[in-house]
Length: 86
Image 1 (cartoon, one colour):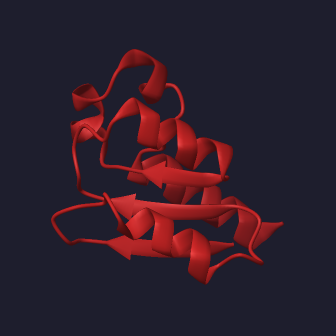
Image 2: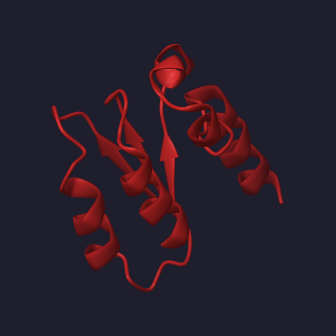
C-alpha cells in the first residue's frame, strides 16, 4: 500500500506524479484537502487505481457519482487498521 499526503493547494498535477513514482504499487491512496476535483480527473484516478481520500466535510463539494467512490479520512483509517491486522 502506498499513501501520499498532499497538503499543497492543488491536486491538479500531483496525482499524476504519484502514478509515475509508484508504478509498481497496484493500489495507491492520495489524501488531499482539495475540494471539487473535476469528474474527468476523478474518473481517470479511479481507472488508474488511485483512491482519493478527502475529509468528510469536503465530500459535498463533489458530484454524487464521485461521492460514491471517495473515501473519508475516517474510512481510510479503518481500512489501514484492518490491513494491519490481516
